[in-house]
Length: 318
Image (cartoon, rainbow, N blue to C red; front, side):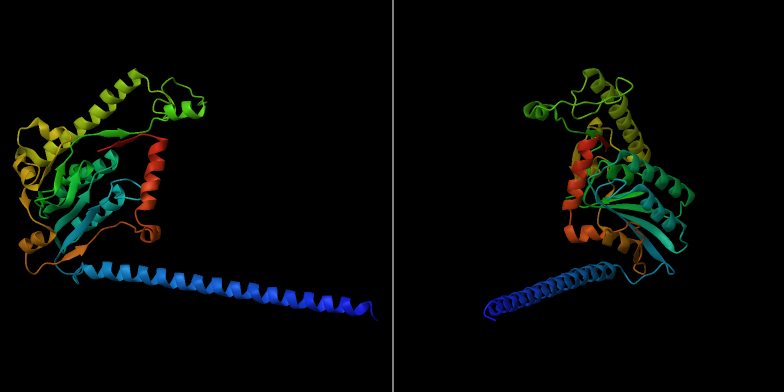
C-alpha cells in the first residue's frame, strides 16, 4: 500500500496539470478567435464605410435621364493595377453610345505610364469622337496630367486645367536597373544562355553594349517620341504654339500651359458641369475594379510590385 500511494498522487497531479493545460489552450484559442472576429468586423466596417462614401459622392442622376458621363483617369497608366486601356475604352464606348449622355468628362490626374496603354485609349477616343461628333469631350486636370496622361488628353475636344496643374512632359523613358557593380561586390557572376547575340540586351545583370544602347535610343525611344509628338499635334491642331521646347519633356503650370496651347481654359469638373447646364448632373462610368488589398494596405503594395516589375525588365513609358 505504501508503494502505490505516491504513484496515485503523481497521477492525480499529472491529470490536474493536463486539465489545466487544456483549459489554458482553450482560453488562448477563444482569445485568438475573438481578436480575429474583432479585426474582421473593423476591416469590414471600414470597407463598407469607404464604399458608402465613394458611392455617396456621385450625384443621384442615373443613366436613364439626361446627364454628363464622367470617367476617371486617375493614377498610373498600366495594364495591371492602374488605369488600364481596355476597361477605360469600355467605359468610353458605353458613355458615347448612351443616348442620354450629353457630354463626357475625363477626370484626369496621372503622371503617365505605359506607352501602349496610352496609345490604345488615345486612338479609340479619336474614333469614338468621330463617330459621335455631337458629344463633346472635356479632359479636366487636377494636380498633374503628364506624359501618357497628356497623350490621352490631347484627343479631347477641350483640356481644362487648374492654375497649379502640371501639364506636359511630352517625352519617352525606358527604366531599368544596373546590378553589375553589386554583383562584383558580392562575388556573383551571371550565367545565361540565349540564341541571338542581342536577346538579353536589357539584362540588368550584364553591362549594356554601347551599340545596343544607341539602337534603343534611336529605334525605340526616338521613334516612340515621334509617335507621341504626332499624336499631340493631331489632337491639338493649330492651338499649339510653335515652340519645340513643348516636346522636350518639360512641364508647365496651368496658365502657362494655356499660353503654349497645351490646354484651353482654367476650371474644374464642377465648373465644366455648371457650364454644360444647370439641369445636368454627372454619372460616373469608370470601369476600374478596386482591389480589396489596396484598401487595406494602401499604395505600399503598388510601389513594391512596381519596383519588382522594373527590376525584371525595362519599361517603355510616356
